[in-house]
Image (cartoon, rainbow, N blue to C red; front, side):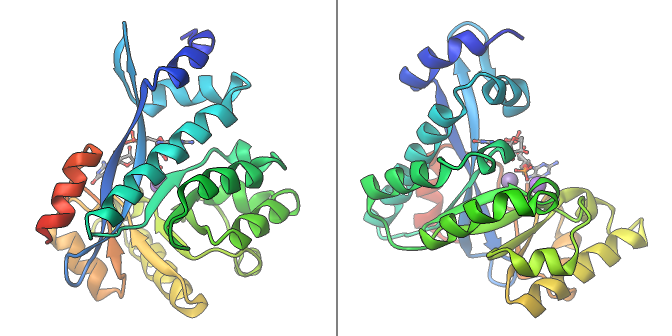
Length: 253
Ligand code: G
Ligand code: G
Ligand code: MN
Ligand code: NA
């Protein structure tokens, strides 16, 4: 798809929108966070999901403009949830390419400055494999983000080959267990081992562990029995608009 030329218009016309999916405490069912997921409401092509446009954005030379617009929207929503009396941290997915850009922390700092939200309101999700396999290049950027009171989460955790030493060198607050392991937990014992070891690793390093792709009650129970504190998935809710998310926060579990 040749959509690169359309990006300046799309960013300016706010054609990119975010849906939000709750991240839930597996014990109480209380929402403890929101993951922001980008969608492109294209005037001619209709609704496009990220798999259809992220590569275009990354190659377009306009990744920073896109990411800035996404961060601005996510922090606007987080500000609205605070104003409604239901504060909730928001997690934004960031392209691994942004970590290679020394100007990226300054971009984040500018967006944070224009919103003035409590420390810890913004979480940035980074893919485990790419982040930890290029530590020498990215650790300065990670440190600067950490110094902005941004929490870092490693997404798709378990699909890379992180060493304990690499993990202990990055200022990360959260591990997100990839949904492929949650889906295969019962049928494939290796997946249960990955889940169990990630939970233990997270515990020993003082990190929050979130299981992705929780679709069934038995998965929630298994995860809880393995000591996993938090989860996300269709069992709780699908991604939804910011207004619907605000309503769900008010109603509670
Ligand atoms: O539901 P879903 O199709 O939204 O997401 C598909 C993939 O797109 C996921 O891997 C998610 O991390 C990624 N993604 C969603 N929104 C964004 C975004 O705003 N920026 C980046 N870089 N990736 C995103
Ligand atoms: O790579 P990342 O973890 O950011 O991907 C998030 C993706 O997972 C989004 O596309 C989101 O829509 C999807 N997702 C969220 N919950 C579930 C679920 O319970 N099952 C499945 N199959 N996908 C989910
Ligand atoms: Mn994610
Ligand atoms: Na993931």
